[in-house]
Length: 214
Image (tube, rainbow, N blue to C red; front, side):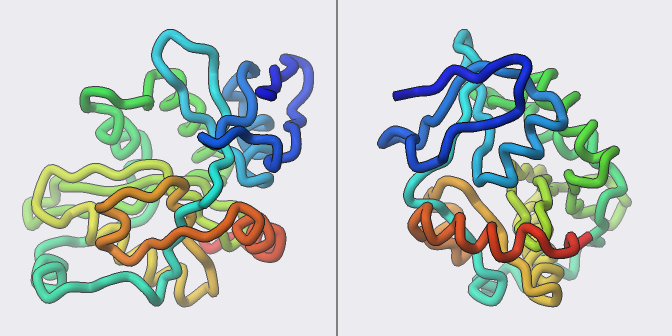
């Protein structure tokens, strides 16, 4: 059963009721209170064109333990080309993530996550080239010591990987974990793995109440 969310409440059904594709609910809005409530329960929005706003909690869940990040020799060389910064150009990063065909990052999503950024919940990691131009980056939502990665982009070789490497360095120092949501070959190549939703929710329950990593 897929649940319809009330416009007047930010509560969600238990993630265990999600279907085989991870779809849990539809409707509602992208208000900051609803988004924060969703991420605190391991739920995230994934808009689909011409459909109501959809909310997911997949099983299994893709995660990246920071010490499992695969730093190849090629990437190690690429790291020397970039200066990495945090939270200096959030709107540009999310806009660039959405500037491609087939993306779910529409203007409403950009506005909503920029508000989360202003509230201190959303963050960006950015890679700048030798000319000081934004070459790649990523953004996500931080719930305590769980960084829920949303999307990344790159316009130069390994720029987004460099940003992810820096995120893992930060997360490792803070005892945090990176939530990658849904696995794909690219994430697998970087060291991500799948765990059960139940295990992920236990991690979220344990780390989500801690001081944020940024």
